[in-house]
Amino acid sequence: MIPFLWLIAASPGWESLPGRWYPADYRPASLVGLGAPQRELVSQLEALGYVGASEPGLPGSGVVAWDASRTADGVNLYSSGHASEALLVGMDGRELHRWSADFHDVFPQHPSTDPKATGAWRRVALRRADGHLLAVWEGLGLVHLDAGSRVVWATANRAHHDVRWLPDGGALVLTRVLHPGGGVDGAPLFEDFVAQLDADGHEVRRVSVLAALAASPWAGLLQRSAPEGGDPLHTNALAPITSPVRPTEVFRPGRVVLSFRHLDAIGVLDLDEGRLVWAATGDFDHQHDAELTPSGALQLFDNRGGPDHASRVLVLDPTTMEPRWTWAGQPGLPLRSDVLGAVQELPNGNRLVTESTRGRAVEVTPDGDVVWEYHNPRSAGPDGDWVAAIFEIERIGERLPWLPAAAPGR
Image (cartoon, rainbow, N blue to C red; front, side, top):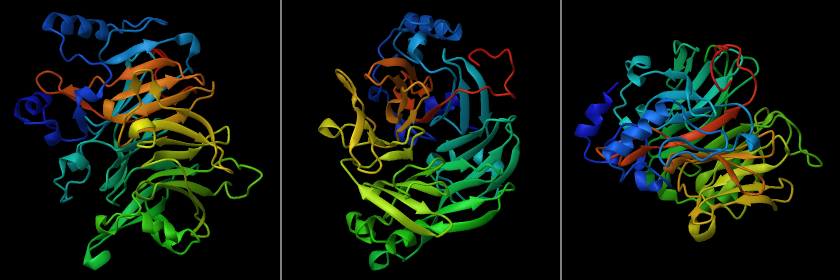
């Protein structure tokens, strides 16, 4: 792993850093502009975990606001653009556990030299019973780690964007194949797949998403994609349906919800039949993280469909596509993440929203109040000029038996 201080000294700009970074002015608040004494004070307070249960914290990094009486209980899992790591933090921001692996240690023969792809995990999935983790290096591969970050298996299957555990210990993951000359006028073409892996990481089946769409009644959606891009779908979400949504039979277990960023569309794929059974567009633009929620809504992070092309959270009726709830940010602080972004429905009715390019996550009530706010403490540059993206924060409410009982925030 490249030493962090070397990065600060040698990198001419945030674009050159391994992983995923953005200028710190994406953030609603930061330490930029504070003098050395103030920075030192903030660092000391953060090290002590000094965060009031119902008082906003100092602007900057870590937990900066927390109303404990209105938040959902649990701990928070996230992957960040600063490194190939996943972190579990308490509601007060204290680190409880960490997983990490170096790409070239896991795949020593892999030819990739792209620091953006090898420098961070795009998506992680936790197996809550034992602390095992699946982690995606974007467009390159997938690794299965145990709770101690030891490699169980790894596969260089061009995994990208999303991965989910299956009850039998296997996984569903988005993969892709590059067809040189397969696109318009001989241009390269990416074909997306949903791949099913067994408990040892071996692929047992795959379904071509592009072929399923092209053979469906919604094939005309492909006209919405710029053909010269070589990535007609840019499938960026894979969400298994676990509970049926009635009265329709479209949304039933055994199928998965997919998000097609370049088509501004959502689809449902039947894995057993290899068939796209439903697709829809709506008043959303370049969306991410589409899924059916436990309450039976279709939820997504709408990257560019909000006011003035800002971002928003959309919660839709899946049978009519009519909005049930939207949230576009706070007064004077619109939600904004042109790329990435995620949202999770919580058991208390709140939603946990990841504003990725600002390195920020907030818990929002149905009335739109922010009751918990976390800023990624991973920054770089001589004055903290760059902040690492947060790909997704997930709230985990149940007990984690492998986590030490004394860990705060359990």
